[in-house]
Amino acid sequence: MPHRTFFWFILPSLTAMILFIALPIVSVVIQSLHVEHEQVLEVVETCGPFGCTEETRVDTEATRALREAEPLGRFNGLGTYVNRAHLATEELATAWAESDTWGAFGGRVMNLPFYKALAFTLAYTFLVTPLVLVLGLAIALGVNGLPQRLRGVTIFFSLLPMIVTPLIGSLVLFWMIDADGIIGATLQLLFDDPDLSLKASPTLTWLTLFVYGVWHSAPFAFIVFYAGLQTVPEETLEAAMIDGASRWERVRYVVIPHLMPLVVFITLIQLMDNFRVFEPIVGFQAQASATSLSYIIYSDLRGDTQQFGSAAATSVLTILGVAILLTPVLIRTWRDFNRKRV
Amino acid sequence: MAAAAHRKSTGLIVLSTGFVILWLILAAFPFLWTLWGSFKVQGDFFSRADWMNAIRGPLTLEETGARFTGQGYWGAWIESGFWRNVLNTGIVVMATVVISLTLGTLGGYALARSGYRYAFWLLMIALVFRAMPHITLVSGYLLPFFEWNLWGHLPTTIIVLVAINQPFTLWMLHSFFLNIPKDLDESAMVDGCTRFQSFRLVIMPVMWPGVITTGLFSFLLAYNDFAVTAMLLSQENQTMVPRIASFLGSTQQEGNVMFAVAAVVSATAPLFVLILFFQRQIVSGLTAGAVKG
Image (cartoon, rainbow over all chains, first blue to last red; front, side, top):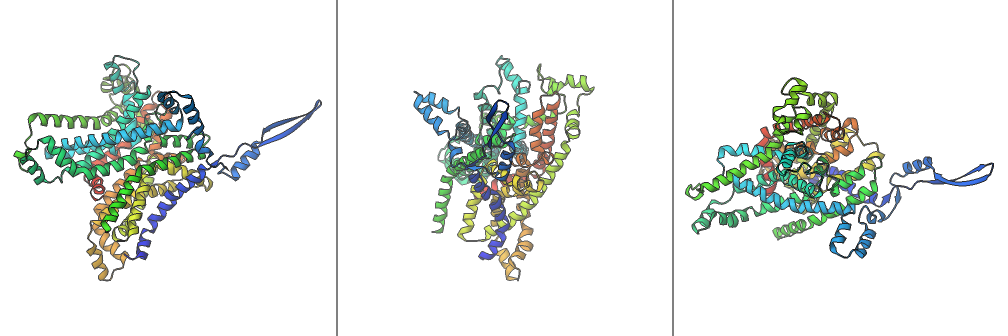
């Protein structure tokens, strides 16, 4: 295809992506370097019968005018990045100097909002992803053993947790684990503890969110693995059996290697999707014990005073995280691509 | 299949069937339970005394005189004006799907037919764009949109959702176009078609399965979105998902939880129907990326 034709075909799509994905990234970087104008102060002299007094007060009119004229605010350099709500370099240094043990240091770091969110996001990403792979493979193997007639129905119900809106899925589960809901009430009965609540303790909240994550994403891994299982070469399986491989050995040494490219694909998609975990925290109202990077951006952006600079700084740090996450994949693809060309 | 080779012990069959049944309960029960409960009153669905109340519904009988009640639905759709949000979702989702597919088929076709190195790089860039958390992009939009008075309107949200969907749409359509032999458009061009005519008149008619599958996923992305619609739409233009989230703010009042439950069931119903009719396309779409990928 000549360059000219290619250009005209790709133009509309490329324009949309540049305007609404590439430029917003630039906009986020610029915003993160700025901070809202401080309030304008004025000195007023009030003179009474007993002489004059000078008084400093906020000039609301001028503040509003200034903020309207320059909505971006004033240049702040990397100030927002190092403040307490983000990388908190000073707090880290004091915590390091004052803590004797790793545990004490970790405890203090976990009180800083950015690190708390980062810890949850990473824990979620790196726990949920492997669990999704394992559960998805197990379901695929199970369904593959079912009679043909039952498979369609099984797939239909299996798709539900994945297709349903994440916020709605998490709400449905949230109502069930409510102390008055079916799971919450049953748990209280089982453990004979009327105060047991999955929402109160941070550990249980984290656990609930992980369970939700696996529940939501397992169908995706299942479907992909199930499709892969249909293409496992029959001869290799038979050859393995003639050589005396047990059922488990056949799965381990024939089926799983055959599915390896799919494992890479699912891992890539899951890492991308789990790193932006956000809706379940809103749905489970878990923000007190678990926040993610996406969630703290969201809470900066809403409310009466929107903190654009702060949200933008977190966004830039999140984008850096995504870049780090994707680098191995991109390097690998680049190598494969070059090998193919040679 | 060689029957003897695949004969399993009874224990294994029981184990694996039991596991699948357990999974099916985990996957489907929450939705069926909520569907059932949405026709009860709050005192039954969230019963402090006994969860069996949600099934038998004594309070529902006492308060409304029947075993099932549509109070939650009446409250959500009529009293709280949820129908308006449903309408907005319809507009946003339909427009997003149509525009996404128009841009995506053009771009995906070009990427599949160009043998140059830059086509590969564009696909890689699209992959990186796909990984961007949506809320980081939203934080880039807000300030400029406020300044240029673009904030709060449905068209703005539609075009943003189209752009966010583009990377995924391009990848998927690109892999479907790769399945169509090159000879087809080349012979059309030998017969005197321009590139666009051969795309329009020869390739598109055989592309419908791919377009429908991709359309389904565009639909899901737009329908399920929360980050963009919650932040970019004004109160009166809200779509279903952010509206449901805002119902939760008012749940302290007795009975209002049931509005949210009814709204949740209403928003799930179209998805249920979607899987019912398009299960095969959804499965093939999920695997299309993997096999080519």
